[in-house]
Image (cartoon, rainbow, N blue to C red):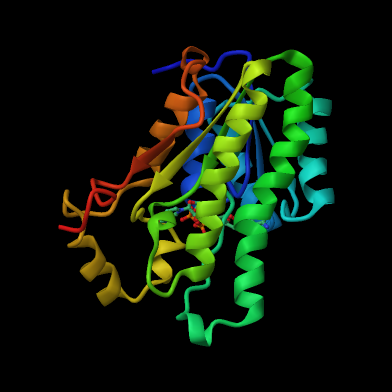
Length: 249
Ligand SMILES: NC(=O)c1ccc[n+]([C@@H]2O[C@H](COP(=O)([O-])OP(=O)(O)OC[C@H]3O[C@@H](n4cnc5c(N)ncnc54)[C@H](O)[C@@H]3O)[C@@H](O)[C@H]2O)c1
């Protein structure tokens, strides 16, 4: 296992699903972890689960799609643990609908939570990372950034995440801050289980490895980019999708 001893990591949207698995993975590697979620009870519970395992963890229940919520999160990490080394932008939502039926709210809320929030947390955390000339930013995009029917809002938001990642890699590299993205495919989480069971079954058959992935498999990819030794990986998009980015099976 790669180590994060002495590192402080923030993981947004980590009350459940992929974010909770990432927080667990980084804590197992020795990081002090700051969890976050807009659902307060959910993040409190995820944080106490880490505490029960003997890991150092705190949390901020905030909406990171607001300037205030993003700043509070970074300030908590700095105040409590003195620094921010790793930022994982994981919080995300989906509101799928075909273009002609999609409401303004469905478009705007998905762009706000999936894309604008990543800008806000990156800006707040980058300032803290620049002071120490070290940082690892990992943005959770999606294989769906390549395009998906009924996902104009989601797909565009994740395409924006890829462009944001590539731009920050250029801007922040000189401060020894790397920025990379993970593009998960179908992962078994509460978000994925919003789909009808028959749709889940049909989709799983389109994956070359013939199954959905686990949150822990995404967390391992995050740990790869978050490692001290990953300082020459910058501006990259890593697919964790069982080969579905190559084509459906
Ligand atoms: N599950 C998949 O198949 C899949 C595939 C590709 C990408 N992703 C991406 O992975 C990430 C995590 O997805 P998941 O499946 O674990 O989702 P999830 O719905 O299970 O968990 C997401 C968490 O984010 C929180 N959240 C939402 N909006 C927030 C906000 N404004 N501020 C703070 N917290 C907020 C939610 O309350 C929830 O606890 C998302 O960015 C998603 O787009 C998921």
